Amino acid sequence: MTSAKTQTYKTTRVWRWARDSWIGAMVRTSRSVAHESLGWLRCGQFPIPDTTALTRSIESLRAALPDSNNRGDQDAPIFLLSTGWRAGSTLLQRILLTDPHLLLWGEPLGEMGLISRIAEMVNDSLSQRDLKLWHEQDSRALSSLTTSWIATLTPPGSDLRAALRSMLDQWLGVPARRLGFTRWGLKEVRLGAAEAVLLSWLFPKARFVSISRHPYDCYRSFTDSGWRHLYYRHPEVRIDSAVAFAQHWNRIARGWCDLPAGFPIFHIRYEDLARGKVDFRELEVFLGIEIKENIALSSSIGGTAVRGRLNWLERTIIAREASEGMRKLGYSKSVEDNNTQTRMLHTEASPSS
Image (tube, rainbow, N blue to C red):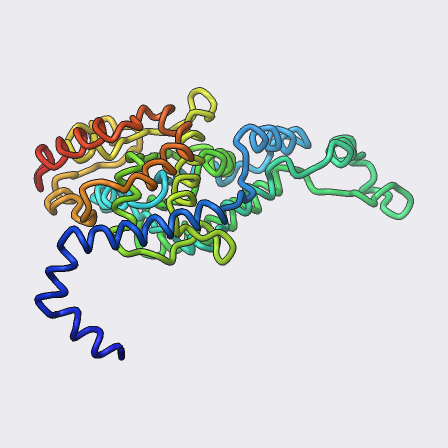
């Protein structure tokens, strides 16, 4: 059957009846189960930066020589980080941008994984031997390069930090200032606690906002939206199944609890945002901006999800693969509890909430 004939057939009354009947629901569920089963079987692990190891590595870099290059330490970017897709990060981005002095770039070249790759590079990447050589290198060798041990001569750690910071500022900060904004930052759905530790090292006055949403609702919105070609990192790590989605959600969710005490982060649950229970005045003080949330909330919230609930296999996969993150962020695995929360959101959320 040709494409044109197929499209014509799909507009008939019989097709619409079949699609909306229990027959259509059964066909869609069968396809979903087959897709998710295949995704679970072929899913593999991929390297991700570890918060503890990255913190240890940064301390080693600091120990190489004192941080003497502090010219860029006054910059205070804002990083809005989400537990993956469909968690409300774009809505929150719009709310923050009601301050006319702030520009938050939206997932800039996200599939490239630039910041994650830098975090992986810094993450426990030097052997104890090379660290010892670096820490103990004799600065006097610079006065006698031709007769000293210079095989591992390396600039101070503060200069590596300044170089990495300069690259990100040139990429994101300079264009924002060129457009007339005095504050800049980004919104991302791929970055977690380890990347936040890296960014905090590069920009000590940076502020972080994290947003989470129940993974059942995230994945339901994700699949119902029809998105099928998203990547954590292109081309090797594709997010196209419940297991890939849940593992990504779990990595980010559990990481927030591994951040050191006093880390400058403000956590928001999408469920609270939709119910109008976020204290934006507290968030204003934390970020040092002025927020007019009613402007961004004047449009209705949500609307992507079509199904009332995930099928049993999707729920089983997410409950298993995201269990640790759900426990740490206080999300229930119970379908009944989550359905109650969802009904409350639909009842309480309004355009002016």
